[in-house]
Image 1 (tube, rainbow, N blue to C red):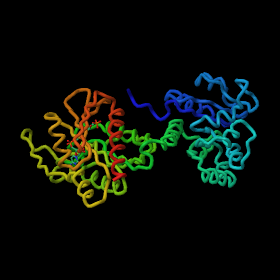
Image 2 (image 1 turned 180 degrees about the vertical axis):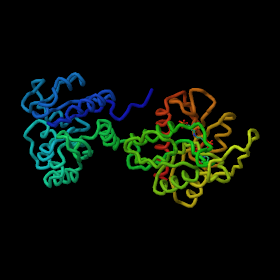
Image 3 (image 1 turned 120 degrees about the vertical axis):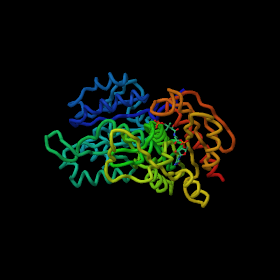
Image 4 (image 1 turned 135 degrees about the horizontal axis):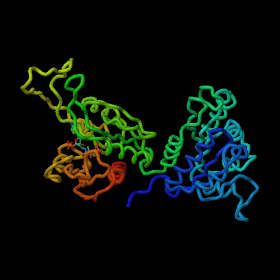
Length: 412
Ligand code: PMT
């Protein structure tokens, strides 16, 4: 069974205040519900001028709270129940008025009362006209709230309700959901750890328009980066693949093996773990032609002389033996024959803690597909053969081992 995502069965209070961007809160709400969260929506009076409570009721299948003094089940005081039971309070959009009340300890409606009473983390997504955002009152209120531990996402710059361009737009729903994910992930088993992941197939230039590469799409590495982020890690993704950057992950774009080596060494200086899922080219053209290579005559071939690329994991291992670099290193072995024997030899030769043996001949595993089938070999001799899984589930299985390995290193 797949590991549940960070929102699964989390209680989230979504506060909606009165701004034109209130309609975007419906998308945020829908995404959270689809991700398995229980979402209670609390609307201010002004918010209801822009969007109906019925919209949120239909999306959440739960009552929508609009009144401090209405007690739906006849017993419990809503602001106390919602404040105490929630895992996260998101306010999107957050107007200058609500931000001002929160920063000054005012609790004159249900939402601001919950904000004062809740022990849960709070995420604000401000939205307002640029002048209101830049006003010293708003800026000092935001600074004060940040000092109190409130998280703030946005606002973005762009076209505002007035038609003017400037800072003050509500960030897009995906960014709000991504920020919420990061806040919740802080309780994950990789919280406080820095994990470096590599992804994609490196490209080794032949001339200005051609390169030598392989079939790696980057999907495996991106899945590991996202899984590590969702477990609370700070993640650096060194990638030669061009996929959309996962929210909250630091992406370092590279092309060649030598660029990847430099980026990995820099990123792992202070990192706890490195997971190398990239398909790094073992060879590169001996020289790169300055101009596009032309065909000579109508027939005849061409010989491309290749030289060895540096082995990134070997360089990391060399640093590790001199006492620096990551505590845990994980590699992949992409094999077309003798899977386990070849993987075992790479595990030892590259001085890894763990290797994922990956048979890349299967059509449902390895390069470019969304699923993978790997066997995990640990340096202590343990072997775990995993069934066909999504790359995300493979990523979590690898990270389960990383968490265990890190625990033994910390105790040592
Ligand atoms: O990107 P996808 O389309 O999702 O595909 C995923 C994948 C098949 C690329 C991935 O699951 C995988 O198997 N990655 C390892 C590919 C590979 O290069 O394997 P290798 O057996 O050649 O290398 C062994 C290990 O050494 C790897 O961890 C590799 O990153 C590392 N290496 C290799 C060469 C080199 N010069 N330096 C290295 O550090």
